[in-house]
Length: 184
Image 1 (spheres, rainbow, N blue to C red):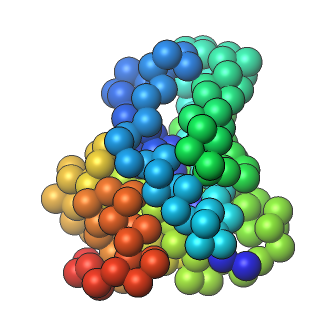
Image 2: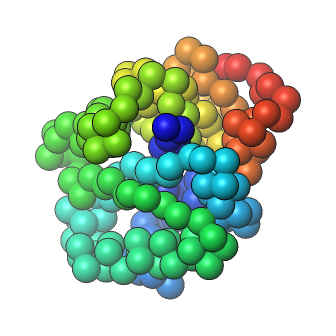
């Protein structure tokens, strides 16, 4: 089985420093849904791992988060894409949970749900914590330069072997045998 783990905000949809608090604020990055559809056609199963501390902060409810994710699923399905599972952490950093990235709990839960080793599974994110969570469980960290990706790249300190891509579509090009990107 081929699996890929994607962060949500900044990878699939535009990010916001003020949080994505409603379905109307959730706007896909151009080409992202098409990239997911290409992955599906190539036999990949798609899992999303996303920190959503806005729930703990009272910025939006679980019902609103579910509505945002319903919009994500509907947008994917319109293009023949399928996001099989969305794993999220609703906690704040102060909660000190194991599921808030950079801790690996969400990714371990994905491995358990799909009953696979995460060794070498691409973990795509735009922030250092996304890459760190993936690296700890043996994933191949893939940084996209959308969202906070340029800032993350420029700060440095990326996990060893991090691959850097313009966007999710470029990750898919690579996975489907495009030229090798530079490793960090």
